Length: 426
View 1: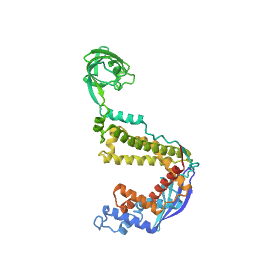
View 2: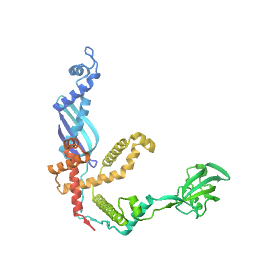
View 3: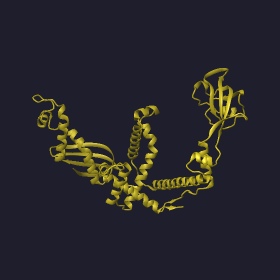
View 4: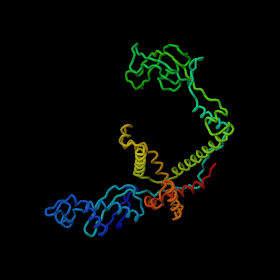
């Protein structure tokens, strides 16, 4: 296989490649197609599937297997031609056979390729790192969260309902004096202030006492789901059976023993400080990474083919489908449940796909400008990390992950490390 001609097309990031596949390669492909198809071929004088290739070609023409053989040859031939032309194919626009015969075949392909991008001022990027100081206020906030998780609801009898309480109520709604469907319930647990009911409903229960019966008036929103109730004024008759409030545990040594492995409050606070410090450090590092990524995307110059965004979104959809399968659900069931199609799902990933493409291109451009190299030792180290992570033999990892692909990934990682090392962090 050989590249005969490569030239830029008028459209940005588009190339026209003329590729020749040699006779030996074409012959192997033709023979492979014959072996696949012969079992379905019947010719008088031979048992079905047993007719020799020369007989089949004599009856149906010498070119009978050409089309399928060329289809088999295209992927590798295009890959080799793109490598020779020093371009990375993003999308094949057109594919057309020019001529074919026993000496091989020639085809012309119009392909969209990865763009040549430019980036400047990527060293010395200024970023601001968030504080990782663990204050007493942060420790107290964490303790309050733990208290809340370990709270319980208790019945309140000595006061009226307040915001945040759970009111156990019977209610029935009327519009123009007539009860309406779905407007009645008994012993309903309603958290006051949750905003789950019609605006004004929960607020009018506040201030009432246990066993009290009363009426409230509300107006249904104009965008309410039930057409017949939109914008209508309604009266609800309420019976308040019970008021329940959240009771938080006391913060003492007994509380500490219940929620942790520590014995005293002081020990627990020290443990929380370590946990919070680790979280703050991770959050601050992630924020620095995000700032650098956003700046790199801003600095990137050049026209990016839409096909790159589309390919990335498709890849993200495939990853999502694999996660669904791992959870025992198939993609069609999920899309029916969500009321969307594949294009709708791809649309959900569009923004993130664009970010990933831009960042990758920015880092690849930096790697090229900085002449970043990847050694055999670098690759072996990366393969070993993957083998350890997936608990696989390193030879199996190497067979599954091509060295060319991994080399590009390592270059990108090295470029990012260089940028982070040179960043001015305040």
